[in-house]
Image (cartoon, rainbow, N blue to C red; front, top):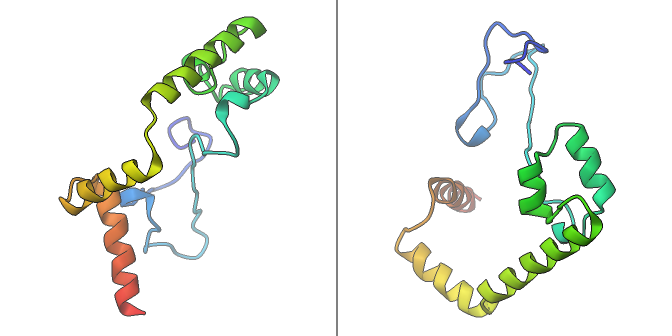
Length: 130
């Protein structure tokens, strides 16, 4: 909204990892923007009318609707696209126990993203100070 001019500000700030800014003063505007929240349930079960409404409101592109929701316009094409996504999921899936063992090994080596590392560091710091 700042870029489009809907909101005007003398200055603005986005903290690392979108964290709370310590520089807030009285009458400052604090905003939080979430993109593509996880929602509830399987995205492949989302009603086509809701997907179409999101698309018409500019919240989704055609490409995202296809990738995330398996939406292909016509009901039969959408059903086929969703079946294909389900088959791909099944082919790539592994038992949760095996996945967890792999993740623990990876994390123990420090092979995690910066966001994950910082999140765990902050959590550990809070646990130590409690």
